[in-house]
Length: 217
Image 1 (tube, rainbow, N blue to C red):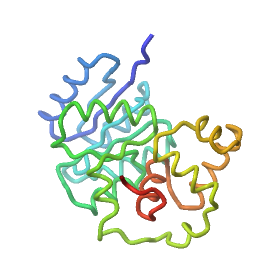
Image 2: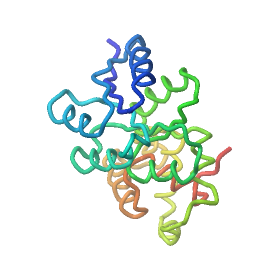
Image 3: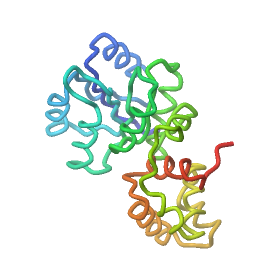
Image 4: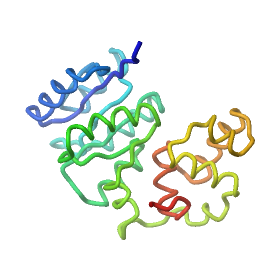
């Protein structure tokens, strides 16, 4: 039986939010748990309702900012769910703010609906979704390298694991290539997060791109 991906939407544009929610409800394998227009409504639903697997978070909502909601989720629920930031902005500063707040990916609202569907499935499966647009934004002139020395501190094994993560390889496959057990790979992944200051897998991928550990083909 195909696994159901539970989805929630947080966006103050009611017409757009409703249209997207209605579309996603019709996609096989998707279940929309709720769609709300404020962070307080989101917090209420997360406190009482079934938790989504993937949450779509708008960047700007009247007097609220999506990254504040992302930080709240990470502080209260940890990495329990994947979060995709949404925005009409194509500004590197905004993309970086969303990713660094703890999101697992960023989507420009102007993308094709098929990519939206693919992004939801991908972030649920792999823990991140970094498309070509996001890659170009996080590696641009607006980025200030705050962890420059960390890249030099990474071992060759850690860098190999990071490359595997960027290639969307499973921990099992990475372990088989490096002749390491699954538990050892999991330990390395936690150590990598601490060493480079990343919050999740998406942060690792972004870091690898910024520091030329993973070269975009």
